Amino acid sequence: MKKEDLTGLLVYALLLASAIIFAFTVMKDFSGRSGFETGPFIAFMLGAIATGVVLNAIFGEIGHVIGAKIGGYAILGVNILGFNFSKVDNKVKFNFKGYDGLTGETRIYPNKKNDEKEPNPVPYSLFPSVMLAVLITLSIVLFITFNNIADGNSTLPIARMGYFLLVVAYIGMMIFVYNIVPLKLDTMNDGYRLRLVINPKNREAFNELLKVKKAIETGDKNVEIKTFDTITNFTADLNFNKVYLLLDEGKLEEAKVLIKQVVENKDDISEKTYIRAKAQLIYINIMLESIEEAEKYYTDEVPVAERRLISKDISMASVRAYMLMSGILDKSLSETEIALNHVMRAFKKTPKNRQTTELKLYNNALKRVIEAHPNWNLEGYLLEEK
Image 1: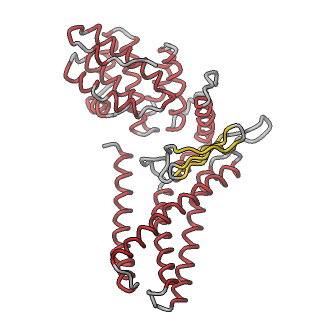
Image 2: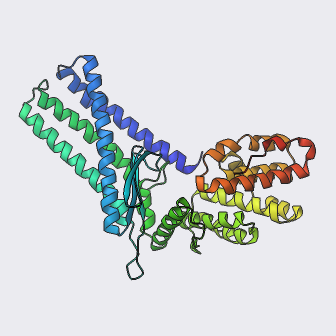
Image 3: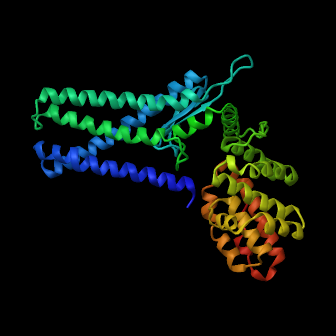
């Protein structure tokens, strides 16, 4: 299990434990005094939880919008729990869309003119937590106020409304804690982003990534992708965009230079980023160098622990490398088939802007294995290129 996966599970476990404690202490006590029957109380709780999630999602994205404006960004779209509002040709369009976040995502663009300062992503990462804190504080103040008016009589509608708002506040506190954790979790939370963009190099890379993503989404293939010598998770991701462009154009030597730079900065990036960079390097070595040279690198520079991590990582970069490692270097049909059976899962997780390139890279790698082992009958695993 990857470090970030373990961290995410730990955070979820702590939040779940606190929710159980809240339910079996505060809310259990209220249920006994509220006059609710079991059915109405369950409906009350479900309504309060749903309201809490929706309100906190809205306040969080309002915070993103405010922070983005303060930081000097243009707003491309706001997604709240899958309800996506995008600005296209100065018109707001609605659709349902996935998002990278716990409850939503606000997509931004560094709309900077030549004489203006570089946009600052710190407010964009900070203000969602500020807005969540505002909603939590308001809900608690109203809970106390309504409770005082009810004067201990929990059967009154105003007392019930107070506890309804207390649940809203508690949902907000859970989302707030998740959002401010300065660690890599399963989604991009603001605490982790804030920790990264405080570094000026990361800030520059963050803005460059936004430019590249917008260009890719709009089909602009002439976008200039800036690369960085100082390697962090953000700059590595930006360099990967350049790597994919070079791989797509068949410029493996140039791609290898960028990938080696990422691999050589292992201590400055996450395990997932490092393993996928190492997988790309193994792929390039086998496709570019002689078998003897590729095998020497594999033997000397890829320890068993890293081979195992690559084999377990469900991404197209790792699947391609694992397939070549197994088929070309280890000459193991069973291991090659394991890699091939992971292809569709990995492909579905691939960003749409990289899928066409990945199809070509995967097929080229598989053809290399087929050429080396024609009797393995692997032609059926080739995928149709778009």
